[in-house]
Structures are given as C-alpha cells and as structure tokens.
Length: 196
Image (cartoon, rainbow, N blue to C red; front, side, top):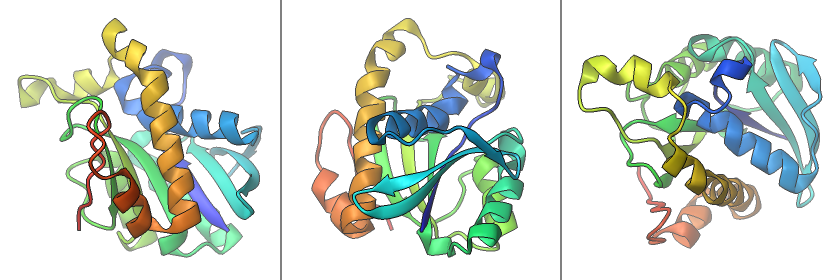
C-alpha cells in the first residue's frame, strides 16, 4: 500500500492558489485513475483504489498546510505505511514555474508542509513530486505570493503540468523513483531532474 499525499489548504478561496499545487496534482491523478476522493479520515479527504495493480490511498490533508504532518502521521499509522512508501506532491518556490522535479528524501527548504510531515513522521526519506511556482522579487512577499491564485497565463499551463506530474507519480509506482527520474529527465518543458 502506498500513500500519495497532495499538499494544500482547504477552502474555496485557496483552491487555485499556488500553495495548492499538490491538491491539483492529486485531483488530476484521481480523475485519470477513477479514484474518487470521497471519504474523510484523520482530518484528510481520501480515496482508496489501485494504480496499475498497486493499492494506493490518495490523501488531501484538511488541517491547513502548516499542520499537514498530523494527518499524514495518523494515516501512515492506521494503514501501516512505511516512510519510503509515502509520496508527497507539493509546490516549490525554488523551482521556476513549469518545472517539475522528483526527489527521494532530502530537506524541506523552508516549506512548512514538508517541515510538518518530517517532524511528525520522524524522518525525511519519503518521495517528493515538486511543481515549481517561481518566487516573488522579495522574500518578504513570499507568504502572500504562495496564497495568491495562479495568474491567467499560469492557469493556461496547469492542465498539462498536473497531467505530467500525475504521470510521474504513476511511473514512480510502476518503476521506482530512480527509473522514474531517468525516464523524465531532460524533458525541456517539465524539467524533471534527479537530485540526491
């Protein structure tokens, strides 16, 4: 069983904000794989199903970004899911918009959702699917920037980006993280790059 987590904030006002990139990726995956996210468990909206024969749980924590780890920990405990079997899709300020990168383990780069997950799971050896959102001109603008809606130009690109990110998740499940990174490495538009 694998747990696939999309990070974001609950509420209609945040639905299309940059910080909700993880939710948008999970929604695309759920749509493509016909896994309705229609249950609530441990402060998360979840859906159970299979992707290419593998049992998966799709989860969108509803605790707000900074407390995502609380829900993720309860889900991993309940379903007995190992840290290495957790995949987290999230926005990334350090990547330019239209970039998607896969990563196994690593730090949190100040991302409060990742900080919460690392703290509550007592480890960082989970897989990340990172969708670049770019960054504002000044660091003081970051909080407002991530909570703003994607621009009209960005919205036009989102369907292709979330489709690519969902395909990357599927490849991780089917072939493993290393093979998934090798497969997607070098795609100019999505710029999936292996990182240690």
